[in-house]
Structure formats: structure tokens, C-alpha cells
Length: 239
Length: 239
DNA sequence: ACCTGAACACCGTTCAAGT
DNA sequence: ACCTGAACACCGTTCAAGT
View 1 (cartoon, rainbow over the protein chains, first blue to last red):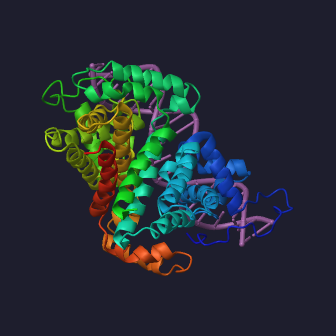
View 2: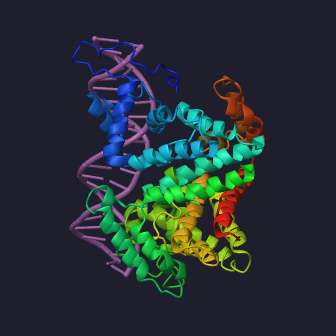
View 3: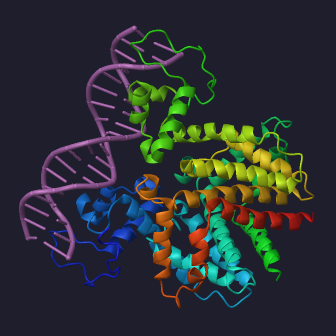
């Protein structure tokens, strides 16, 4: 908590010359945390594993971060910094198209890093880049003829949709797939077989869409849903 | 894992007559797990706390459940059984209105139990009631003039939206609120003050909607977003 | 200012043994 | 079939002490 507003940049450019004592920085702590999350997921990010990676003891982490929860929040937000940077120039086209572009950038980032789904855009108070991304999406609605309430609701709907669908897809894949024990293809085939085995009278819808399920890709399905939501916003704005 | 398909009902109606040895059932394990989750959240559900509540040792839980993850999945699904039951008769009105009714029932259940957000509708293979709820929503799209792909995408979008927005709202409230240390009202005021303190040139959207934020309610905002998505589906179906 | 050492109070999970 | 006892191998977090 006391370090929350600490400068993010490394104060001394080079890591201290002494070699017996370990020395980190907020940047390196977060960078290694992200690396650990990418490699082994949320469960893999332990304070002890992180400290070992940085060459120090567990207690050293607590100088930079108030605890594991804040670490997770900050690690997620540090990734969102990149997403925000990548959409900084968006805002000159059709407002709805621009919202789509931002939403897709955010979604793609979460697909690449499934652990992000649970920690991105959680707390705009602690996560400055989450706030900026929320702001950025909202700014596009400012260019639509809507009321303030409609803009607020539309923006929250977009964010909720992105996070929700992405999170859903993140843990749609069980551990066997993430650990490389099973390919996505094999997993889909197994799930498809399960669905086909269901009683057709009891599960008419499942049977109706099982072929689509077998061949679907997350990105395409996400875009399709996003376009439905955007169509609703466009209709409301009358543009 | 071996117990996954065990009958859910208590085999012997009365809990064994012997009083020195603890004796549970899958039902009681899940019921106490839900109670624990309601009282103290996901972090509060430990195998040891659950076992103590049931009057036995930690190892006894493993006869009913393969581990903590499966316990969480099954506890969530056991709550969804009630949600499914409550919407069983839905399906005679306008299809879009029926989808709305189911989505709202699901959302309300997650608002009541924030921990549900992270575990509901996660794995239709392990969670039978998640599957039935997904099927139920999908069945309404069967009554709309859409292609199978469109129905699949629309249904997944609805589910993703509900889960996403609900999950978002679930952890929007920090621990101080959940622990009763702070009221929701006070929290909203604090967050609102933070937002007003932001630079207006840099955060025009935040300033534009801060008054709406201060007075918003989760349920109303969810319905507004849901209606945008439903409007998009209606437009696609042309009904 | 920033890190070490060492401890505290927990965890989930396993497994032989009991009933 | 279902539970106990006891252990294993971890956790996050704290804090006095060092540099």
C-alpha cells in the first residue's frame, strides 16, 4: 500500500553494483511476475517463486507490493499499458468502428494471456491503464448522439462483454490443453463427442449447433457477438 | 473423479446412527461449501474449514470430490440447479423476451452470490446445470429465424455478457465493502470523488459520466446493456 | 532505502490404517 | 464404503535485524 504511488521507472538505470545482495525494481518485479504468469498461470505466480526468479528472498517482494493480490492487479495493469499504447491513435473513424477496434485489441490481449481475464479492468482506482482504456472506449461514445446515461451503460456493456467472453474462453480450456498434454483440436473433438452423446430430445439446441461448435474459433465468435452489441448501440444512437 | 457420477441424493435418508464417526454426503458437502462461500468468499472455502464444519477431518472431503477445484465447480453448479428450476417454465412468450428473463435470473443469482461469477458456466462437461442453462437460452434462439451459426454466436454472446458483467460487478466492490467495513454508498462516494479529482482534459469521458456513476445500480445497468445486445439479435433476426 | 533470515500460521493433498 | 491420523510439501505474510 505505501508503495502504490511509487515512481514506476527504475531510479538508478543500472542494477546496483554490489553482487552479494539482490536488488530489484518495481519494473523488474512486474516483468518477472508477468513472465511467471505466462508460463504457469495464476497458480504458478507465488511470492516465493517470483523472489527466487529475482534472486532474492520472499520478503523482498513486499517492499514493492503490499501483497499477492496487489501484485496480480499491477501485473495485469502493466500488460494493459501495452494494449492502451496500441490503440492510442484510434478515434478518427466511425465511432462504432473505433469501439470495435479497441475491444478487439483488448480481447486479443486476453486470448494471448488467459490469466488477464480475471485481473484486467478490475479496479480503476488501482489500475491506471484500466482506467485509461475505459476512458478511451467511453470517449468514442462521446461522438455519438446519446445521453450521458446511455454512454455510461454502453461503455460498461462493452467492457463487460469483452472481459466476460474472454474469461469464458480462458477457462474453457482445461489444464490438459494448457499444459500441452492435449491439443485444442483434440479437446474440441472430445467435447463435441460428449455433446453428440446427449439425448437429442432433451438437448435440441446443443445438437443443433454441435457442428458449428466443432469448427468455431474464439476470435470469430467474439467478433460476431461484439457486432450484435454494437448493432444495438448503433440503433440506439440512430447513426 | 471416480465420484463424479455418484448419485446426488442421500442414499440412507438419516445420517448414520453411530455418533463417534463423522458421516457426510455429497449433498451436505456441497451445501456447507455454498454456505461457507456465501459467508466468506472463495478464499474462505478451505478443505479444512469445510471438514471442520461437517465435523470430520480434511481427508474425508476427498471421498466426495477430487479436489478443491472440483468442489468449487460442483458447488457453483448446485446453485445453478435452483436458477435452472426457476426458469424452467420460460419459453412461451416472445423469444427475445424469454432470453431476457433467463439472463436476468442468472445475473441476479450472481449478484446475490458474487463468488458464482468466477465458477458458473465454466465447464459444461462437469457442470450439468450450466449445460442445461446454456441449452435453455439456446432453445429460445431456435424460435428465431437465424442460421445455426447465428444462434450459436448469439447464445454464447448472451452467456458471456451475463457472466462478464456480473463478474465485473462482483469484484468491483473491494473487501472493505464485503466485510461490512464500508457501505456500498460510501464506497461509491469515495470512488466518485477519485474520479472527479482526475484531470478533465485527460479524462473527458469519466467527467461526463461521473454523475451517472454515482447514482447507478448494477441491476439497472446490466439490463440496459442486455437490451443493447438483444436489440442487435432482434435486428439480425428481423423480428 | 532496501534486503535477509527465520519464523508463524496456515494451506491442499496423500495414504496407510481403521471401522 | 467411508472416515481417521498423521504426515508431506508447500503457501503468504511478518518482523527484527542487517547493510
